[in-house]
Length: 132
Image 1 (cartoon, helix red, strand yellow):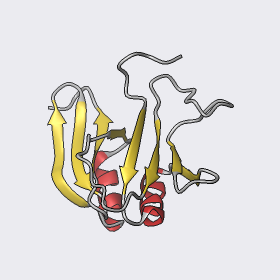
Image 2 (cartoon, rainbow, N blue to C red; image 1 turned 45 degrees about the horizontal axis):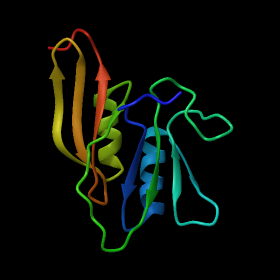
Image 3 (cartoon, one colour; image 1 turned 30 degrees about the vertical axis):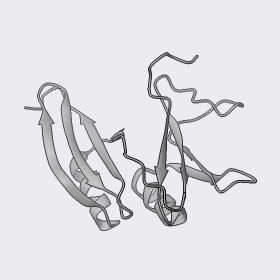
Image 4 (cartoon, rainbow, N blue to C red; image 1 turned 90 degrees about the vertical axis):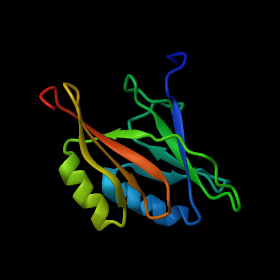
């Protein structure tokens, strides 16, 4: 079932998509597979049905590709993690740069923002109702 106005897909652009695939699979254990007959790589963050649609309520999947000379403005996607601290450390080891360290969202959780090795902004979020 598709929900109107819900985030349904994301794309990550880079000059070396294979290197970015290695970065994101190492950081988040995502499944990234080439789409047959194209230069597009499918990113699976949650399980899908036979049609490739997410089966987890609210789950989204995406894609990765290289478009020479194309550098769009970006929306920042937030990825839920078990530990902001652990994910920050892991991301930095993999080449990410922290642009905003661990920050509370009072009563909701913790977030941090980074740039991947090829300049894409992204953020992580750890739910925690005790955050202040």
